[in-house]
Amino acid sequence: MKSLNAIRISGRETLPLVEGGKGIAVSNGESSGAWSACGGVGTFSGVNADFRDDNGEIVDMIYHGKSRRDRHDELVAFAIKGGIHQAQVAHDLSGGQGAIHMNVLWEMGGCERILHGILEGAKGMVHGVTCGAGMPYKLAQLCAQYGSYYYPIVSSARAFQILWKRAYHRFPEFLGGVVYEDPWRAGGHNGLSNVEDPKVPEDPYPRVVALRKAMNDCGLTETPIFMAGGVWRIDEWEDWLDNTEVGPVAFQFGTRPLLTQESPISNTWKRRLPTLREGEIYLNRFSPTGFYSSAVENSFLLELKGRNERQVAYSTKPDGDQVVEYAFGPRGRAIYLTPQDLKRVEAWVAAGFTEQLKTPDSTVVFVTPEKSRQIRSHQVGCMGCLSQCRFSNWKNDEGGTTGKKPDPRSFCIQKTLQQVSHSEDIETQLMFAGHNAYRFASDPWYANGFVPTVAQLMDRLQSGQ
Image (cartoon, rainbow, N blue to C red; front, top):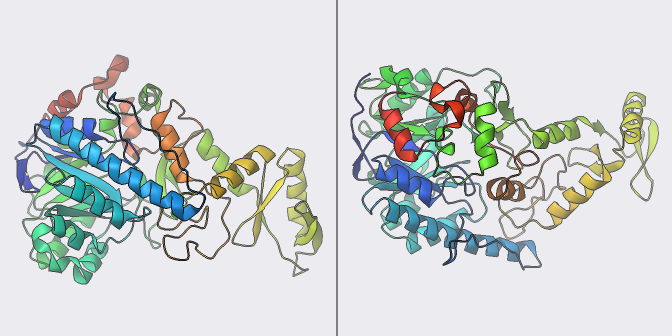
C-alpha cells in the first residue's frame, strides 16, 4: 500500500486519520485525546458532553426549570460546562501537542451559544470544529473569532458551493477542510437530499471529485477533503492517495473507534457490535429533526416502525370515502374513517393498541396506554435540545414553538441518546451506527472478542487494514 503521508490540518502536521465525532458522550476527551496522541486528529462531541466531578463521576443532567425555555437554558449551560471539560481531558491526554477537534450539530438547540461558550472557555485547546446537520452559515465567522479552524460537513458539491458563496468566502484562511459525509453509509444523521434515493447508494468517488472541482474553483486546492462514511480500511481507498482528481485527502473513522478500550460506550454495546450482520443497519426517517438517520435495528426501531404503520387518515366530517363515524379520545368526539381503515383500527384496538394520538398530518396513530403515557411525558418534559423538533413542536426562537401539533410518530432524541450512552440498555434505545458496522463480525482482527486500544487501532489503520 502507498504510504500515508502527513498533511496539514488545523495548523499541525498530522496523519490523515481523523476520529469521527459521534453524538452525545459517544466520542469524548479520552477517546479523542488518545487518537490525537497517536498522531491523528481526535474529535470529541460537543453535543451535551459529559462533565465529571473531582471523583471522576459523571454529573447527571437534572433539569429544574418549569418551562421549556428554562430547561433549554439549563441544557445550554450543561453543554458548555461539559464541552470545556472534555476539551481539557483531550488536551491533557494528547500532551498538548496533538490536533483536537470538536463536533457539533448546527440543528442542535442553542448551537451558537454553546460554540461561543466552549471556544471561549477552552481557548487554545479546540483547534477545529466540525459541523453538520443543517447549513451552518455562521460557523466560519464564529470559529474565526476564536482562531479555530472550521470544517463543514456536506454531502454534495452543491451544498458546499452554497455555503461558500453565502458566508465562507469571507473567512478562507480558517477553512481547515471540508468533510464529505456519504449520506448512504455514514452513521447517525445523514444529508440525503429530496432528489436522492435512500435505497440506491451512489459511488462516493465522482461526488468527491465534483466537490474537489468546486473547491478548486474557489482557490482551495490545498484544502483537504475528509472522506467520511463507509471507510473501514485504507487499502480499499488506495487509489484516492496521491490522486490529483481528489487532491489532499484524509479519512474519517466513526464506527471503528467505537470498539476500542478508550471508547466510552457500554460493554453491552461493545459486545453487540461484533454480532451485527449486513442489513441490520439501515436508514430511517423517524428522527425528530426530519433528517434521515442510520441506526441498528432493535426493539426501539421496530416499535417506531409499528407505530407509524398503525396510522390512518381521518376527517372531522364525512368526506369522500371517509364516511364511517369513529369515537376519538376520552370525550368520544366524532372523526370519520374509510370502512377499510375502520377494520384495521378495530384489529389494532383488539390487540391492545387502544390509545389514539393525532398527528400534524390529519392522521391518527394507535399505541398502547403505556406508550401513550411515555410519549406525553417526553413531550411535556422537552428541554429544547434541537433548533426545532417535530416530536415536541419546540422551536428555538422567541415563540418557542413550530406552530404545529407535536408529532407522536417520532421520539425524544435527547432522552434516548442519553440513555444509550450512559446505560447498558441498547435494545429499547436508539443505537446509531455506520453501515459498515457489520464488518466487525468478518474482520479477523476482532476475533475472540478482541477489543484494541486506540493506539493499536491506529497502527492497524496505518498498515492499510
